[in-house]
Image (cartoon, rainbow, N blue to C red; front, side, top):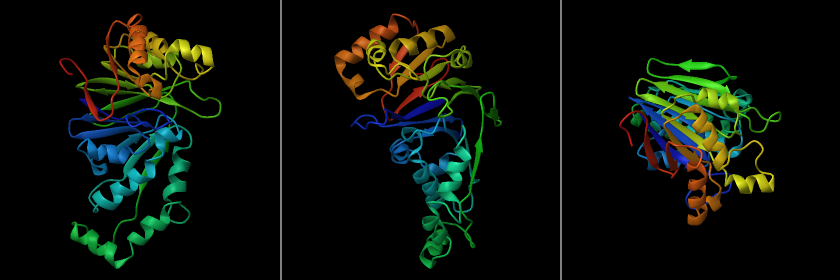
Length: 292
């Protein structure tokens, strides 16, 4: 299994990082976790396209994790679904269903003025047929489900287990995910402070992709430590869970500074004795024994 790092930053864009988005490649299947800013463009830069993804999981509904959702869905339907793809399956915490309806419903969705005319206009129908589609053109459809901690979603090749992440409650629900396959196990913490539920979810995982906002000392001093992991918080969770490799992501812009990055590495390494990686966008991380 491989994990493609598409988005490894925060709501504040930098030339190197912006938002959260990941794609796990399991055999011929691709599972996306979060769909933050420019996720669709980064997916294409990584050598994939939206039609290759059949399942999307949201950790929570802050815009740096979901703002590219309409772009991704419209591209999947408009340029890769010629009547041959199944509807995209989408899972996430409360608001996933209503967000999907508000975006794509044929009668009142924000993007209905885009996709509905494409099922009717002669030029769009000609393009659809020229690309191998048949008429009448199928309407855009997304199968979205609100899920809660403890829910398991599975196919013949993978199993996704959920747990509650502690982030912006009680104002916003958040989930962490554990993707289990025959090739290995990866945990996506989403945005969370150190918490037992995520530690338990991550037990023995081959890889944990964990948010790391900043140096823990800085966060503890400026009040940003609630609902988020910093360096030592991420390290403690990984160490207690016994994960083999730790990828630090959701990095604030100042963590790109060499001296601050080095301090962060030392901070994490003083607690966690596994392999440590700072996430770089458009890189691929192997999952399981013998991978890089």
